[in-house]
Amino acid sequence: MILIKFYSLVYNKQLVVLAILFSVLVVHGQKVIWISSVSGDFWNETTIKLEKTGLVSPQLSIQKGDSITTFKAWGTCFNERGWDALNLLTEQKQKSILSQLFGPKDDLQFTMGRFSMNANDYARDWYSCDEVSGDFQLQYFNIDRDKTTLIPFIKAAQEFNPDLTFWISPWSPPSWMKINHYYSVVSNSEFNGLDPKLDALLFEGQETTYDNLFPKKLAVNDYFIQDPRYLTAYANYFCKFISAYQEEGIPINMVMFQNEAWSYTPYPGCAWTPEGIIRFNTEYLAPVLKEQHPEIEIYLGTINTNHFEVIDEVLSDPRMPETIKGLGFQWEGGQIMPKLREKYPNYKYVQTESECGWGSFDWGAAEHTFNLINHYLGNGCEEYTFWNAILADDGVSGWGWKQNALIRVDSKTKTATYTPEYYAVKHYSHYISPGSKIISAKEGKDDKLPIMIIETPEQDKVVFAGNFNDESKKVTVKIGKRFLNTVLAPHSLNTYQIK
Image (tube, rainbow, N blue to C red; front, side, top):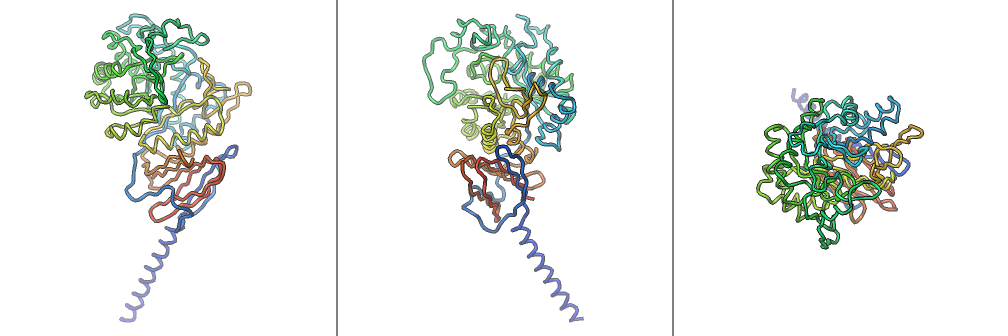
């Protein structure tokens, strides 16, 4: 009996030793799936293992408990020119593209959509839902135009993900609600018919300029008429638009009062001052939405200026915490987002429009977008919205701006090309699902090596790394006691899924 117990004890100790050895091997030899892309050669897969020691001093490391934010959603915008581009393709190809954009198990896995209230710069031309001057009761309000363009586009996407959520912002109010009675802010002899004399309303002779800030001059007038009748009608306009889309089976859960209030454009736009922004949001929009659509959240945006003092003035109003849930940033606004988040940590932060470039459709655009995603998510944004998912030919707007897109359609051959930027997005969105934790990030401002680490809801770790240098770079990321060692090819995008 004693002998049996002795052998049993020895046997159990051996099992314990074997289990420890096995766990050590698993920890130090954990499988890593490595996806890499370079110009002209996308989405190559190989496997490596975590190691016991670092190849170089770690550029990024994480410890248990590290976290920046919990990610909620990737999304894209719906606009008329995107719908036109999609309809150049066969029905089978259209479905394939929509699945790749919105399918829960497909490439990009977008779960959110943005669209404009009234025309944006990628509408076919200017329109609003009520162009009847003086219609303060909104008797002539309708979404008839949208029923032929935006709504079919959105419904086509909903077929591949019925749970899509949506948010909206206007580019311009109805023209009769503005002090210049026109959809744009400034005149342009080639692209609109606004009287150049009305441009004087913007600055009223102001000569002050701001170096390194956008815009270099700030508007001195609100282009929306600051009369209670107009402000009340416009707040009700938002509510009617939300209700009309709800009736179409398209739920809107967030609004922003204005797209780019600091872009003084020849296409649809509207300039606002801090006083006007505070007045409309706190005294008109928020109370009416609370009464008619309490399910809707208001975010301040879209913020496209790096004038910190302007946004700070708005947020300093004591009524704002009860008015807005969060802040939305794009373009130059992203530069001041970290500083604002430090001063106002209780708001939610989202990115609202990925930068669209100038119609290059090239590898440089992919690197730029990869870097932007690192910046916004690494600085606390829990949502990220892309602008043009699909455009035709040179990606030109109705107002002459050539822009990039994730998918480019050739109108002559009726074929679609997945641009380098598409793969830059896939490197992130295919792996960062809603509920993922953004754990740690390093921007690539100096060394051109942006790196980020996330944890999926399944508790897998994923590392994203770009090398925007002309030579290969050694990179080490420390994850607890383990090391991810890799050599990044020049001008490459990389994703490492640690299983």
